[in-house]
Structures are given as structure tokens and as C-alpha cells.
Image (cartoon, rainbow, N blue to C red; front, side):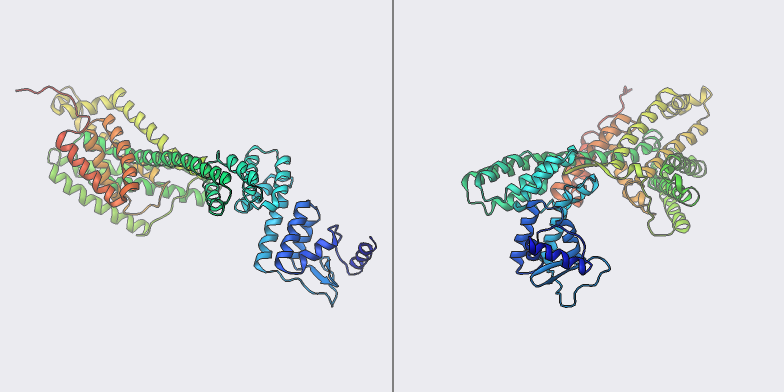
Length: 513
């Protein structure tokens, strides 16, 4: 008692900060061999001394000195005794101090501080900190953090010297779906000597592996559906221009590019003139991308394609030339380099269903958007006067003209509609990747595959073909890689067309002999 009182007087004389950590523990943490210092630090941490945190931060800041075997905490701005030595901190001690401070932060009143501490201690489930973890768990009120703390407590028990405690910890961790937990169990399994604990760990590893496998399957299915929704958006416009009108439009990919660059232009306008409303730019970019692509499509139809109906080879060559003109125009206006389109805040991040299954918001939005565009397009073709005229002209142009339909106008409107839908697809694609002059080239072949496989003029066939090709593509990529997957899909398409030349969902009709 007298020794501590004398030490307090020395602190006051030297301008030292107030503290209450036991002098013996403080001196052992500040000086000596690394193993002894770490043991003293763990002892103080297990005791839950509130003064440990300030002492460790002072040690980190270089405000601790050792004199006569005692640790002195120097107050900020005060002068340390000339004959006092500064403690040495090697990498191991720095890691131990950071880990101890994170452990103490588990008892903080600030939820964010506790969450950051849990993230720091995620891979440091040390048995020496078990009592601290259990104390934090007992005090934790947040449901999400409690689950993480339970996993941390169980992980710390895996390092316990008691085999029974290790068996119980393995049983608790068996219900996890976290890859990091499985990795921890595998690490401990290699050094486990107790047969019962080893069997429990093996069972926990198998259970977690099965759960992770389901997450991987769900992730693969979602990736396939996400790719399928992109292919559906790309192919819907082509289903009109090629499926209904019979025009082999090789510039369809460039119409996607026009929609994507229209989105980029709207984004830049918001960033320049309305930065506070930046998160809403997409609502203006959608109609802008549709109108930009529709106007380009209408100009193509009026100037070139109207003269080439019924001549597929000439149409193919002409639209291929138009695609080159559009790409060069974009390079001239925006440059040859890719441009970045930023997601609004509400499309950033993802929905974490499992530790290995996260559904990005932008992909979910594209799935919903593809469904809305499909419903709108089907309603337009089936329920509106324009849709009736388009179907009439495509089925029998002469008869439609005889009943007063302006077939030339319908052709232009239908082609503009298909082009506008391609522009919407470009707007959606800008949210999941960079935008460049070659954007459309990556999707034109896949779009034609979808329309041909589904059946020319069949919206239902386009949907099934797009989603089927998307899921099948991801399955094959996981098995053989992207290049071989693409080759396999092309071979599959050839086989299907050999068996069903009009696609999977061919138009029904009556043959006349």
C-alpha cells in the first residue's frame, strides 16, 4: 500500500496521468521478455480492469516509461524523467495490444465500436480472452452482434485445454454457415488429440460444408438468372426487329451502346448541375436511353432499312456498316476509352442471405426491370392499337394495307420500339459494368442465339431461351471455363436447330398443299 502511494506521488511530480492499473501488472506489460509481457497482458485483460485501455493506448503512443522496475504513464505535454527508459514494442506486442484494445471495445456502449471490435477479433478467438468474450456476450443487446459473439466464444473454447469444452464448442459451431468458421475448425482439427473432440470437429466441418454447398448452388442459380435477365433485355428488342419484322439487324448491339452512353450523359449532367439529386439520375436516364436509341433506330429504318425488306443478305451487310459508323461516332464524341457509370446509392451493396450468398442490389434491380419491360412489351403488342397494327403488318402486309393501315409508318414505329428497348437494355448494362464503344459486340451473338432458340416471333420462347441459356452458361463455366462453355452453347444451339428449325416455340400454322 505504501509502495503504491509513493508511486502515485512520483506520478504527480512528473506530470503523469491518473491511472489505477496494478503497478505490478503494468511493469510486467511494459518491460521484460515477450512471453511474460503477453501473459501479463492477458491476465489484466481477463480481470477486466477498466484502466487497462488507457494504459495500452499510452503505451502505443509512446507515453510510458520504465524506471526502477516500475511503469510510469506520462501525461500529454509533460516531460518524462531523464533516467527513465522507453519500453520496446516489437510486432508481436503491437498485435497483442491491438487485439486487447479490440477486446476491451466489446464492452463499449457504442454499437459501431463493438461491431468494429468484432471484425478485428474475427480471426483471433484466443482462449485467454474467453472470460472477456463471455462478459461481452452477457451484456450485448444487439441480436446480430450477439450471434457473432456466440461464434467468437465458441471459437475461443476450441483453444481451451479442456477436451470437453472443445467438443461442446464444435457442436455449437456446427450450426454456422460461415467459411471462416469452417477454416478455423479445419485448423484446430489438424492438432486435435482427443478422439471425441476430433469427431465433433469433423462432424461440424461436414455440416458447415453442406450448408456452404447450398449457398454456392444458390449463388450459381442467381448468377445464371441474372445473366439470363440481361440476355432477355438485350434480346427483347431483337425479338421485334428480327422476330416480328424479319430484319437481321447487326447494329442491334450498337443500339445498346447508344442507350448506355445516353445514361452516361445524363449521369454527367446530374453530376455537373444537380449533384444533390445525383441518386435520382437513373429515373431520367431510363426514358433518355429509350428515346435516344429509338430515334437512332427510326433514322436507320427510314434511311436504309425501308428499302431492304425481304432481302436479308443486303440488310445484314447494311446494318453491319451502320454499326461501324455508330461505333466510330461514339469514339469521336466520347473517346475510345471506357467510361464509368456510377450506381446510385440505393443500387449499391447487396442483400446478404448467407456468408457466401450475397445478392447485389443492381442485379436484383435488373431482374425486376427485365420482368417489367417484358410485361410492358407483351401488353403493348397484345392490348394496344399499335400492337394490333404491328401484328397485322407482320402477318400479312398486303391485307393490312388494304384495310387502311399505313404500313410504312408501322414499320418505322415497330423498329423504333425494338431499338428503344435495346436502349433500355444498354441503360441496365451500364449499372453492372463499364461503358465503351465495343459494348454491344459482347451481346449481339448471344441475343441472336436467344431469339433463334426461343422461336422467331415468340415472346415466351425468348423468355425461356434467355433464362435457360443464362443458367446453363453459368453451370458450364463452373465446370469447363468461359471459352469452352461458349463453344458448348453454340454446339447445343446447332443441335436444337437441326431438330427444331423454327426454335423451341415455333409459331403454329396450317400448311396448304
